[in-house]
Image (spheres, rainbow, N blue to C red):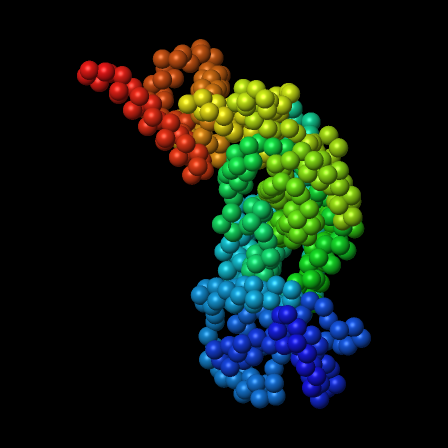
Length: 551
């Protein structure tokens, strides 16, 4: 036995009777049942063969390096476990994910050699429960309702094929959805089969606890307990804290279609070295897309719309942007800076102009190194400092600050109720046009429905708009959407028949019987809410003092 010390723990090398060696492994504390677990270190010793031995307890996804005594205990326990015949509960699945997350957090520079053994029939059943059932079918035309009719047999067949390596990833059915309001631009969307969705969800449930320990706070897209609203809050707080500064808008050209498969798998392999999982991910990447009856395969890209695609995108951009920005860029800057990323949409806020220009200049080289290209027109360097009217005359900079769009909102400098400079977030023009176009098209398509069915559905759509765009400072835009919705409703209700138009008096009767939700503010940072509350309190106190007796 050869032992060496490292920063992550004790490295051990053991030679088994079969002649295999395990190198570069970190001993974990023993589990509750006495099983010793270990995970392989990120840099294995060249020229030595690694043996992957896994724990039959399946409590976590670590690679288990077992001593002779622990192997004996497991050989004695396995028949007893089969005799018990108990299936893991949902709590057991949560415990597995928790232990995987703890091991990943404890050893951030190590890789997991065995993970696939955690996926069992109960794991697949939970993955099926988390899969959307109302989605469109894939190339096989099988819906979730049809798949559920023989659910247990289908899941068992899927598990057997996954474990044996005979699972064949089907091609993804490609459809094009409208991207703009003119109907000319479209966005490609991939629709996997229901069985593929279930297996992808199971793998995401397995990999998510590992990479959640690696992801940084600057990433908000497609992560548990994180949302686009939190990203918007971070942008507002960063621009207010840095007094605007300089903003770099980053737009990656066709990101999901240009991710190199080889580089992506190398990035995943740094933390996940399970051959079963790497092979299944490779099958999904090489499955191709079916369009107009033809299957097209490429050496780059992940289907936008797949269950595992957002996780792979976050893993890749974490390596390309997040780590690079925090470990290499920030230490070299003169002033402060902040990165906010939601999937492939990101902005960088800088306090000093020279820092922004240096980073903006090196961005194309950084992304090109990983096979990505930036859009030349949409990637911009903007001056977003405070407007001249709120700066001292001696420090006023020439020119007015520009505005930028992020996650459907236009960010610009405005005045608060007290006249102080504040960053405001207003619904962007392109998103407003898209929402109004969708509402008008929906009213036209559903104009013949009964009012008892039409009005609640329309109200649900308005609640969805208010729920996302109901941020402080955007109430006027929501009021315009509410008014335009009434106009569209009146127009298409008037075309139900040839008896004449629906007058406003009659429409108000409809709205009184089936009221539509009024615009309301539902979002805003705690700092924004405090500023608004303070401003209102000052106005109330001022107005009260004017009318006070003896004032």
